[in-house]
Image (cartoon, rainbow, N blue to C red):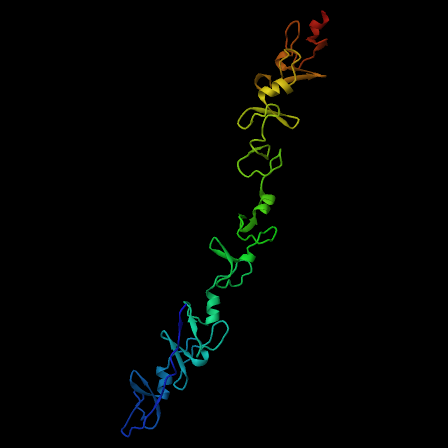
Amino acid sequence: MTFHRHSGPRSYLSSTMSERFDCFYCRENLQGKKYAKKDDKPVCVRCFDKICANTCAECRKPIGADAKELTHKNRHWHEGCFCCAKCYKPLANEPFAAKDDGKIMCGKCGDRDGSPRCQGCYKVITPGAKNVEYKHKVWHEECFICSECKQPIGSQSFLTKGEEMYCTACHEKKFAKHCARCKEVISSGGINYQNQPWHSECFVCNTCKKPLAGTRFTAHEDQFYCVNCYKSDVAKKCSGCQNPITGFGKGTNVVNYEDKTWHEYCFNCKKCSLSMAHKRFVINGNDIYCPDCAKKL
């Protein structure tokens, strides 16, 4: 920021010449009268005010011949109009700053006007003050706080959500996903099953601990099993063929009766092999009979 000094007040002359001396505009005789020079030409006070006077950059009124005029970079002011645009301090005999928008300011206001403002308290961040800059915005160090716990973040790492900033602990507590099994935070990766997040290392077979992501598995009483462990350890055995009823492939359809279960394709008459699925049947011991064959027993 550059400071400039204004010029001194314009001086006027009084004619004492004996020969005729006229105003350049109205030709009035200027002998013994006050006059001003405009481009080295004598001008009476009346014509100067009417024709030659500069317009004040502040009040927009003419600066008359009898007024003190201040000039800076081809702009002109009455002495009383040459004031700081913010605090209105008179600057006729003071250092000042000329801003790009044409405003004149005292040194103090000029410094403040050029300084960034804190995004937290919206006050000026004075030169030398501790501050935090993020994405072309600036905060006082004490104003750069977590949106949740309201504590200064300082030089710690932080995370954002929209326009809000959070310390790592608060962001984790508020937004992080927690594994459905171990309840710990899933910092990266993980899988989703039935709208619940899991660590990949937690989504495993309950028996052999084999990872289940990307493989066939089944759920039983809130536990997960790979196909082999489910067949051997969990699945019911068919009362007909004694093989496990897994619910996979050909064994998808089953028949339940009292405490026994059959593959649908195993639920046949012991004697004539007629399928009894969706039909009346007779149980004799562990065997199934159609009504006709049961009569012949």
